[in-house]
Image 1 (cartoon, rainbow, N blue to C red):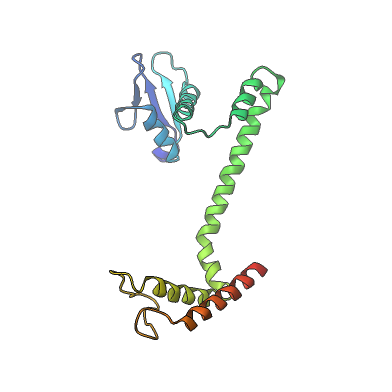
Image 2 (cartoon, rainbow, N blue to C red):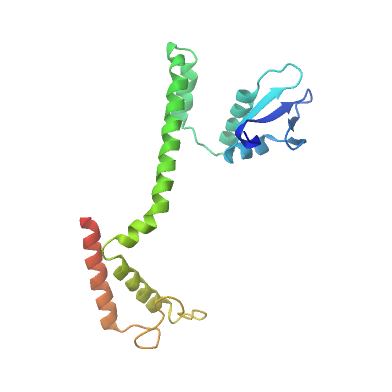
Length: 187
């Protein structure tokens, strides 16, 4: 098991300073939030008593972000959380929240997987190559007269050799774009 597989141990001294046991230096709440954002689990232990203070510090991190205007938790959710502490629903809330966040994480993972395979899916789409060529012509037409734009790169060879398309070419591009939009809307 590597060091990053086990929780990062943070010790809280009597002075309330937080000590990273891996790097042998003091850390702040923002540092701890950064470790967590990077995917690392943390465990915060009181050095003297041995009590696990992780939950307390994680709640403090959330509270600080909320107070800075980084409102992730809607007021209704916060209100429902407070209510859940005084009702018999209290036992269901942790499981519900854990399941909800697991679904969110799973959905994000699937979305990222889809995005990494999407370029291949787009290139296989009928009409994609024609759409790409039309985009190149459009960009040459729009940017051809701008200083500093050379028009080099894919599709830089202009039939007119001027960097500007004729009205007929623009009309053709518009027709082809309209046809592609119709095809895409049918998919």
